[in-house]
Length: 164
Image (cartoon, rainbow, N blue to C red; front, top):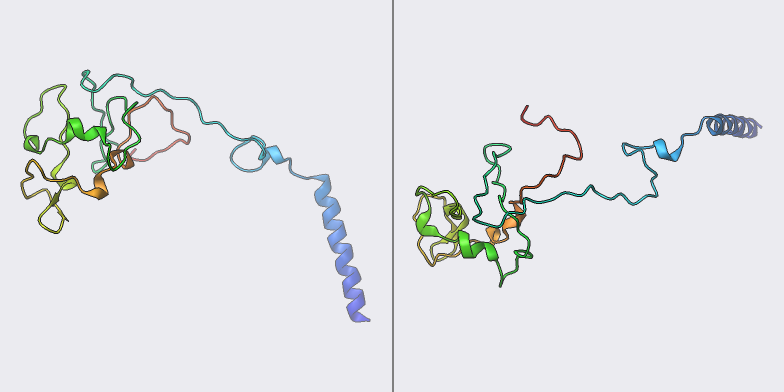
């Protein structure tokens, strides 16, 4: 008897709560951070890369933080995808003889010593040992756009106060 009274009471409470929620239901368009419909397919805003070709006097931008990988100051149209047999970045930036030397305006930035393999077992260089022509770029650093991205006019999707 107590069990059936409890069950009836629970049904009444749940039914009343459901009726109250139905009156003040939340519209699907106001759920979440994005105020659009959950059924829409979002389209990111269009952006343009700095279309200047390599060596056209492109300016390097300041890094977001001291250890951030530098941005690519030129268009990479036609340079991607990077594959094991094709890395167009190497044709200009694989200049180990220029590491640590002053760079003239318009000259490519050499790949840093830390990106090369040295020794018989391919141990990554700590940047202390000299890199020679013929040394290979480490496979862990071979796909440049894994860390480096081209400069664009893209606006942040979310406001950030990082570094402020």
